[in-house]
Each structure stands twice: as structure tokens, then as C-alpha cells.
Amino acid sequence: MTGPTDTQRAVTEEQWRDARLIWDYHQMHHELRPAGVAIGLGSHDLGVATTTAELYRAGLFPALVFTGGNSPTTAARFPRGEAVHYREHALSLGVPDEAILLEPNAANTGHNITYSRQVLADAGINPATVLLVSKPYMERRSYATARKLWPEVDVRCASEPLELDDYVKSIGDEKLVLDMLVGDLQRVIEYPKLGFAIEQDVPEDVHAAYEALLTAGFTSRLITP
Image (cartoon, rainbow, N blue to C red; front, side, top):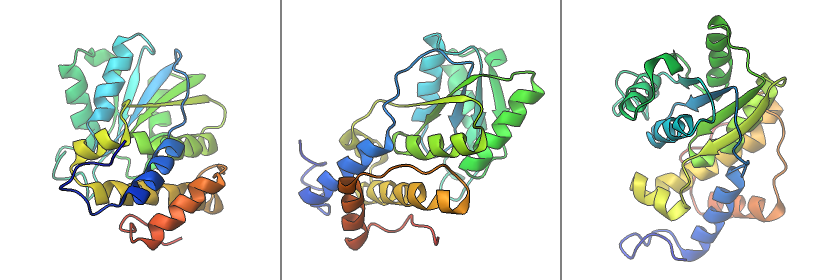
């Protein structure tokens, strides 16, 4: 398998191999099973709303929350807010309005979980199982965050079933995607130290890939620990 195209050779084959290791690590590979509710985590990626709608129509859950306000990376794409645009898209795909709850204020993943939990409680919904739907490379971080902030529920993760190459093509900027893979892995590593998430084991080959991409300059999405 090759990386995206001859016109996009800024990323070397070795860097693509490293990126695929991290991409695969970020996904939890959970078996899909029925859940009490789904939470679609807001981002720049409308595929989250599409996937949530498809899973609803497949009968995996009876209700869902779309959560997310705006961020500098989504304000232009979703001027009314991530959750609002996600809801509109899901309605266009046949999800009934009464199945959708809206959480329009979250500014980070911790907010996504805690605010959605409150929206559900306000609606009289106290699920034992929750399906988190996110960008593919955000599964592990969202899982670790939910397990920290909502430990009493059984959390499973899902995302749009895309290979890395296809995801890069859908975004149109390979360096940005690799920056985001690296940035999310940094958060998986650092957030437990800050009390934001539970710790996740990072295999040696994944950590080596992460260090290599850091050294190569894929750093625009890093936080200051």
C-alpha cells in the first residue's frame, strides 16, 4: 500500500508506515453491539454525524446526543456550531428529530462527555452503555476520557470505517492529518497525568513511530503539557 499520490510526496514512505501504526492504535476495534445511547462527538468531520445516523438506522441505539460548540478549526465550516450542523445532517439522513438530543456548548472532549451526560440526565435517560462516535483517530482519547469522567457506564467506540489513505484524501491535507495523529497521541500520553483521562498502554513500536514523526516536524497540533 502506498501513501496518497505522486503529487503529495512531502511525506516519506517511512513516515506513512509510522502514521499507519498510530492510526491503527488510535482505533479501539470494539465490536459493535446495542447501546442505551450514542454520543456523536463534534469536530470538523461531518462523517461523525453520517456514521451516527447509519448506526441509529441499523437499530444499535434508541437515542443519541450530538455534542459540540465551535472551535477555531470548525467555526467557518459549521458556523451554527458542530452539534447543530450534525443534527441537521442526521435529520437529512432520516433520523427522527425526537431521537436527537443537542448539546451545543462543549469546547473539548471532557465537556463532550460531562455536558452530554447532563443533557441525558435532564431528559430522564441514564444509560448503562454508551457508544461514542468520533473521528477515527479520536476513538482512544474519547474512550480514555469517558472512562475517567463517567466510569460507571460501559463505553464502546465507533467511527467511520476508513483507511488512513482514504481519510487523508477526504481531508485533502496529508501533513495536517499526520499532525493531528501525533497531537492526539500526545494527549493520550499526557492527559492521564493531568487527571483528564485514564492511562492507556502505548506499545513500543507506536511510541517509536510517534517520536519519529515528532522529530520530523509533525507538531502543529501539540499541546504544552
